[in-house]
Length: 97
Image (cartoon, rainbow, N blue to C red; front, side, top):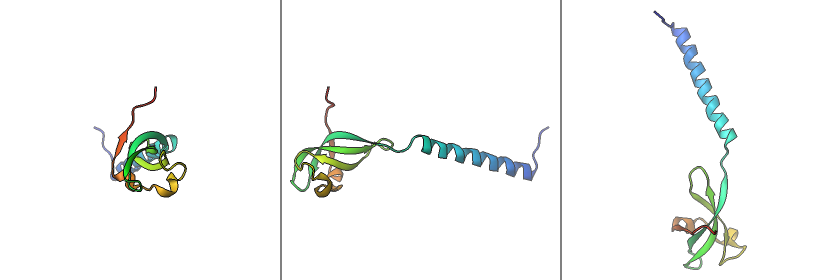
């Protein structure tokens, strides 16, 4: 019959926790969060209409996190467009062939 003492059980548990933590940290380092740019139709509260915009989408959560460019606002999207337009609704556009 195999048995463990309290000290051996504690050491085994500590080793298991250390290996699990090392694996989690390794995955986070090996696969960092990345954002990719996606075209979508967004309701712009500044213009009060739906416009085409380029959004940053988080690869892990697949949520839209920022507006990088807006067709109606040009290069001023980073200054004028905030996250309110993302909260109002995003409709993905078909991918260009």
